[in-house]
Length: 409
Ligand code: HEC
Ligand code: HEC
Image 1 (spheres, helix red, strand yellow):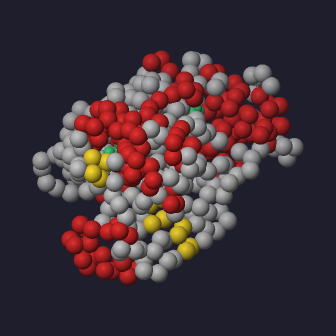
Image 2 (cartoon, rainbow, N blue to C red; image 1 turned 180 degrees about the horizontal axis):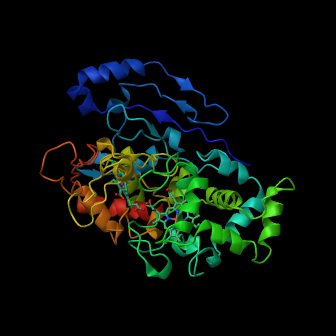
């Protein structure tokens, strides 16, 4: 039942870039004059990609739908009539590799192969779900994974910073979990690679569940029918009963099955252009063009699952968080955070790694302003914003359209 998902990877040039960096354009233009297809191996490190043929005439001849400084919704409707591969290509920065939006892949096509394999076993997933919602996993039995990762809040918790057992505060906001099955590097800063390694972390973390794993395993062996459930899930050859490895596998298998709730955006992706109203459709087009969002929020989950500095590291200030640099100590990682998925984003606030924004409108206005300026000092250890973050000069109507679009995701 798993639809095979074939993302489309395109390289596209904007007219301005063509003029400005003629050499770069010539080189990469030559590279993509031939249409290249690479096929993934069965494990699927790289998705099957198609480098679309670069057509210099395309932009000049296709209508832009701009009329007297405004987007014409009726025109947009004709251009977005079909499925994503037939849509107008978005405006991407030079030689940017990107994945088109599309239906959300089922289990098996994710970056987390082992967890996905376990997820094909219903008993392992059921055990994982049970553990995920069980408060007895925390030392004082106060909180479960689901206390922070709440299903009706996109598996986030509505708080700016996570609050663990005994009310202790974490340093970052609880992220939604929809991108996790598709990420090769987990957490806001990418410090862990597999879900199995990741899921045991919060159990022992003193500001989360605060429970030594050894003690938890001893407790689980005495609770309800957990020993039988572990045995059933992992089969007759499983001699360990309740142990840390089984716990990690079951939780990871459950997490890998999580998908955003279907919305009108899914209908639109399936080719039903009437699923979005004019304002939402305008917002969608701005997202892919003038507002530059598509540069990072691309692919089926609206995240490239890569790391960018969008200017929220608060260098030298109280809230300072240098993201990926905090563990890698590589100056190139200063202020880098993983792009979050935007599916079901309206339910996930407050937004960003530090929950800084209580409203999506605040987020959009901040992007419009080009985010917070970098620190004035020069030097290799000062975080710098991604060149993709620029002042956007959106009109009030355009800001409202983008917001309307974010609401339907
Ligand atoms: C106290 C709140 C809290 C609890 C309890 C909690 N988490 Fe989290 N979770 C977080 C925070 C905060 C992060 C992000 C931390 C960071 O990036 O530095 C996170 C990150 C994650 C991620 C990574 C998501 C991604 O896309 O990178 C997964 C998966 C996850 N948690 C699963 C779990 C599981 C499974 C449990 C239960 C064993 C659990 N969490 C318990 C707050 C919590
Ligand atoms: C340079 C890449 C990049 C671009 C361009 C970009 N984003 Fe983001 N976006 C990110 C990253 C990275 C984060 C997380 C940053 C953090 O928490 O510090 C983020 C976070 C967000 C969030 C918060 C999601 C959450 O769950 O907290 C929203 C909403 C969002 N972006 C919308 C947009 C919109 C709308 C645009 C276009 C106006 C846009 N983004 C452009 C990379 C980008």
